[in-house]
Image (cartoon, rainbow, N blue to C red; front, top):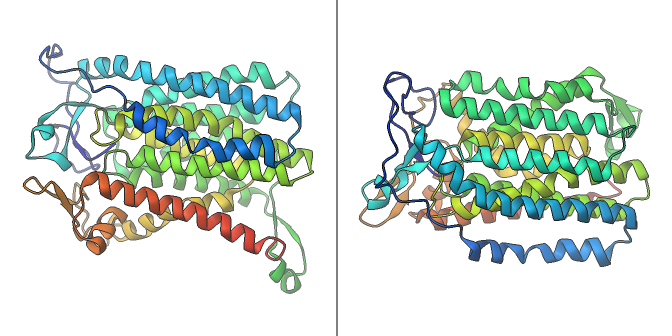
Length: 423
């Protein structure tokens, strides 16, 4: 999304953005002098598409996956690919409409340069959310029957994602205070928590079995509370690890790719039909998430021509949360989210009010050099700049996404070395 600033008639520091007040003034006509947004970066998408080969190798050659299951995955992949092209086409159309409603921002990390004066359309994550939901709903026709045991939870997951997307767009328009933002994922997660009929047990790590005396522990309602807290964390952690062009969407793409590889590895290594179905369920949601996010990244990558808004960060966080919950790999998901966990821990003193929290916890931009310099604010972005020195916005984003990929790789290594010993 990148750092952005919107004009406001209120001085209340309710979030990291300042929103333009359109309630008390007549609707402005769109400025015909404003140029259309830049075209999508197809070269970036082509480079990233090469990363699909390891996934296809695992799906078709390495693991003996049942033909029926492979067919469902491929149908979902085809529909997701169609969703990518639809999203690419819809973003320029939607950007004109949001600009008409004065939903635009200025890139603070380019202040003092010509790019810093360009109106950038805001809240384009709404396009991704809509296309994702359409793809996920239509896919039911090809995979689920009316009496499918998974259909209720699948629709409950979509209800959570739809609810969170709506609340995110409301936040973009109304500029909801941070304390309220923390509650929004809890409300959006209710459909899933009420419809969840899976197990509420956890497997005790083998080294602790001798001390506890049991191998499986039923947590009951505590497990559902944990599910709700996971949804809150995933949603807000994506939202606060932000401030650079492409960072919010980029981290979603990296984590989604890791989730996809993890699911196909678990399907290929297991003989339990229910276990396989749980991970297939995750694939059916993560493939359209990855495809539509790639489409948005083609516009949001540096230099960004659109901002994703809280609509996208809430949508992406909630989607990955329900994927991890219903796929029964929430522990693995949290390790994939290791950079977000670190960013949250760094942010905690300021978010809790123990240390004064400025309106914008962003690095300083020097228009003469075009480099960002870290501040003392508790974010991973500033932590990297303080330790690595001044960086361009694009280079810093690449460093952070590389760190995200390393964290995901660490998770795979950890699972490999602990397999058979930990659980």
